[in-house]
Length: 574
Image (cartoon, rainbow, N blue to C red; front, side, top):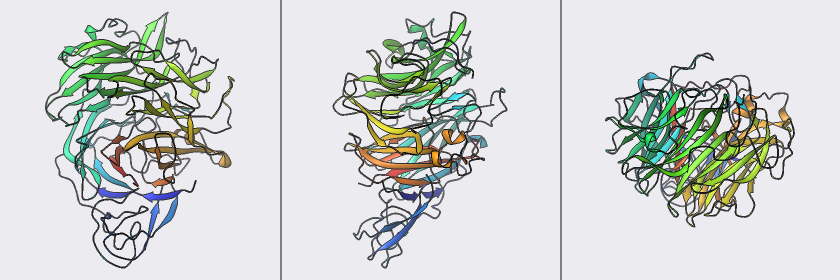
């Protein structure tokens, strides 16, 4: 595929707390087709840019130890509303004839704004010994997971909330002095950028802030807060209403609890209601993640990475719980242990309005096809897990995993994965070749795979990972991926090239995995491996991350402690 490059339009917004949004700085589009109100053709320039033993079934034993530059030539003549200053018609900065100030962003571009963080705290770094799609993290090299949720998406001014963790990185094994935070952002129709409002809040009592969900009208906001085991300032113990409450209350291996904070007035600066939802959350190994989903059936879906004690050792897996919002009692929907066979490494839940059921796309360090292998699984809230693909696994390293899962109008689902096309052998050492690819898997309403996985991105000599999949509307999706370890540059590479993208790339696809646009390299913009972009309404998606995250210097990665957060908005090409 031909690859073009785009640079995000940047809006500088400083002093997030107690200040309004800032001025547009250098607010010109580059690399996309901006239709200004003049005549002539323009040329736009854009830059794109262990310990591990035992695997076990379910309760597996033990603890497992695009950038570059390019020039896009825009010819488009039309008259319309381009982005930024856009003199002339054509792409980007359009050095054509004619005049006219464009209004709104150009298709196929990323708009970005910067914000300082609450109380001057930096982004929190990933926990040490975190397992990710291509390599584990023995040290902190990337920011900790961020979570997003959008509301008012059918209006011209949708909001996106960001849940993230803050705190300076400490030398392992000292725990980082971390805390949680929520930031509110609002789409500016003039610039096309999500911009932080004056509403932001740090929660010192939250060790980390995690899964986030909002109602369509922004009135209800829910977030998962990691609390110390034994904290008692909650309003209701929802976990006590679950039949398996004792299994999910295990101080022998867990030092944290998971609480749900909820606001029903849309104001995160007010006091939330606090509910205990799990008491077996540990920090020994940061497998998997913690998610919150809001169903239109009056429930929350809660995905939790759990750590329990049994047989003299600790076990690592997940729970997926469904909470009734009418009384905040737990239902019997979901499961209290293990989305699939083995330790849970990835767990991406979603709610499907067509069926009113939750489903989880899951990855583990075990497979039904032999050992050592890793399994990729699909599981509905009321069904058994289906292993739909197998990946290489050895020790505490895996060659692939799952990303976001989205509902389809027919009751089915579409998910994105990292892996290899074809069968893999159970061998003690993960083979270097072939490199990984990005695939799209479609499932029916019962969770069964429909047809074959479509491998959308396959590079013969380069690994790809950091998958993103976000709906743009009308059966169209934004697919994102990171360009990772380069087999033709092995002398320059080190293991960080498995952990941090050398470049970030996006393209648009349909629900069958067919590419609808050429890939575009992003410059100065990226995302976290397990972060999930969210739809902002027709043709737009949003997310947040640190600025300039790509591994431009293989020996000196960008700091995972960033004093600024970059808020990003993508506008579809069509």
